[in-house]
Image 1: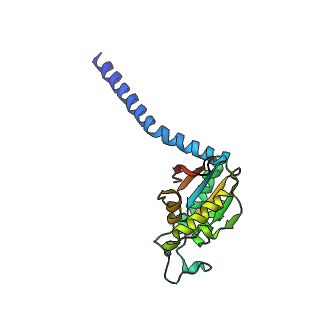
Image 2: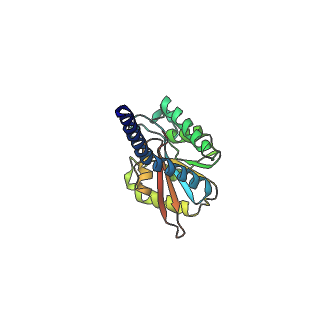
Image 3: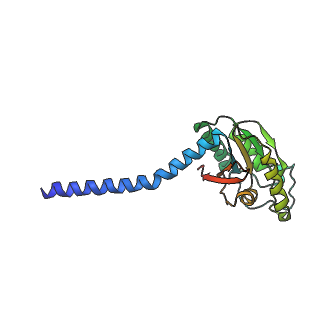
Length: 196
């Protein structure tokens, strides 16, 4: 009987631990599912920080039209961008309106998502080296977004500084920030999705 009691108590402890783990992980999974659903159903858009590109900023000889002068995606960054595109499709978003910064790491990320034609949008360009542009560029992005129809999924591939200026969120490479436009036109962060 003692052995049976010990087994019974161990089983109940295991069940309790399992329930705690499920409770801890359940809401995050549910939140991700809700965010993907919101993104696909209208009224929301996604800001995506470009995939992994080692380093910070860009070299001194940076030129927007010459990728060899820029910090670019690593091989892992390219694989990451492809996986992120797979996450869109797996969550019922096979196609979206895709806009990108003109920086090569953003354009490559956007193309590797493979969820729609990529359009360059200069107001998504990084102001990391020209921080005085932060306010005016963010204001112009808000104006651009105010004129958009969010009926179809919309993805903006850009840089950490741009995303942080617009939302207050400091995303990691490849992280999605899902934003809702309320009835008054205010942009509200619905949540973030870590894609890795």
